[in-house]
Length: 228
Image 1 (spheres, rainbow, N blue to C red):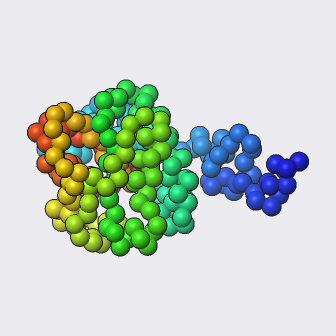
Image 2: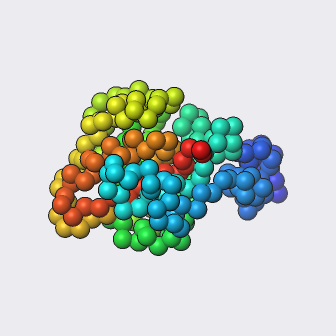
């Protein structure tokens, strides 16, 4: 009865279609969950996300959990955690990414997750860094550490939306720095971001990570990549 009353006054609805969720569903109903466009990149080396960085920066592995389509369910979820204070959605999706990487096996030697940083001004406005929340959800599944402040953004940059590949690179070049100190011995750092389009931001972050030590390796995982 108590659960029924809570549902009446505080209804839990699917973020995709608005249908009321069952007691076993969270964030998405089963129907909308099955519509999320999985990439399967975590299972395959030399996947399209990985090939984006060939000749640009040495990445061990690169994955993106889902394809990002305009007007799709995933876009609703991304907008909710970026602009509507829905941090719970970011953590939920981070866990999904964590299960993908755990299934693949290649992330088992990851030293720490390093989320792509926001400029302090933007983070104060938003209230959190959504990449750090994704990393938090991933870490729960992978059992590894999150270094939320390992990378810092040196200057405020304009939004990457609607910029060309060249403009995106010019917008972030030399904008990131490694601030955790030099890493002695082997380390595998996994960069975490929300949506990967041209890869310019992750490329710039990877170059910064590789300055942390001679035996440092870097991989990257985004929640989604732009569908082509």
